Amino acid sequence: MTATKTKLKIGIVGCGAIGSRLAKAVVVNFGDKAELSGIYDVNLEKAHNLASELKINNIVVSTLDDLIKRCDFVIESASAKSSKSIAKSVVEAGKDILVMSVGGMLEAQDVFKLAKDKSCHIYFPSGAIAGLDAIKAASFSNINNITITTRKPPSGLKGNEYLLKNNFDLDHIQKETIVFEGSVDKAVELFPQNINVAATLSLASGCKDKIKVKIVTSPEYKRNSHEIIAEGDFGAIKTCTDNLPCPDNPKTSFLAVLSATAMLKNILEPVKIGT
Ligand SMILES: NC(=O)c1ccc[n+]([C@@H]2O[C@H](COP(=O)([O-])OP(=O)(O)OC[C@H]3O[C@@H](n4cnc5c(N)ncnc54)[C@H](O)[C@@H]3O)[C@@H](O)[C@H]2O)c1
Image (cartoon, rainbow, N blue to C red; front, side, top):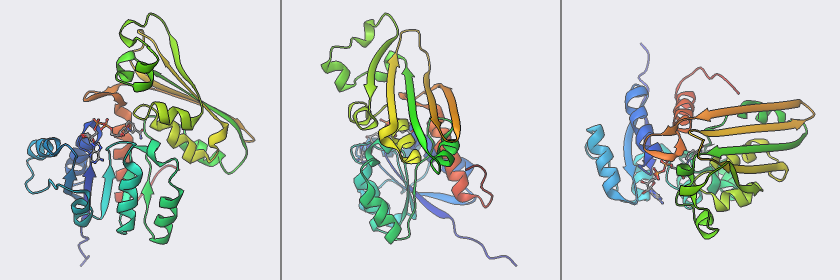
């Protein structure tokens, strides 16, 4: 007779575009191995709406602490402003976390150390980019330089404070325009909702200072695309994704949701494929 394994209790912080879709994935795709034990959003109405959509009672909690108590594993899909403190609280409680708002984790070495001390795991999905497997491998050799060029339709940059302050009129942009060129730190500071991929690339490569970030928009763009070019002792890596936006949030690429779903599969299934 084989022993029945208990299901992994998963909790979600942030019930927006990504959190809602991942909640559904937990229920629909991984119901045999995991259960959705709690959902939390600073906007409680969003959590309640998600619970009724999923037709699950008693999963909405009103504080992060309550969520952590109920779960073994937390998915952060809230914001770059809070991801580090959320990750810290989860890891302090000895639980694992998957972080979507990677931009908030660039200066989180203390949380990484805490995870090590507590034997916890912090997972960062590849998100909307391709090639992180090769970049991780390349990081064991010398990387000379990496450029990531993110192209978004104007709607994907709407509401960005830096662009508003600098009078970029996204509604009337006529041609392809570079709206930002600079370091990962600056990109994450100025485009926290748009540039998690640069942060993930930085963590995977371990060479933040060699990365140049470019953000370009055009009325002709209909998709969010991310092009990565890296050079070093291994040769060269060139990858490009041409992503459709998530229907619930044009700032988010649908591939980012799928990438987190694939990572959940990797965590839950015994056979793990890919670097
Ligand atoms: N890693 C990647 O490749 C990638 C790709 C796209 C988006 N993201 C990031 O993932 C996060 C979620 O994206 P989204 O499209 O679902 O955004 P969204 O705006 O649709 O949803 C975010 C939700 O989180 C809630 N929230 C914000 N701060 C919170 C907090 N401190 N505690 C609890 N709830 C909080 C909001 O009320 C909202 O409901 C964002 O930070 C986004 O930048 C990452």
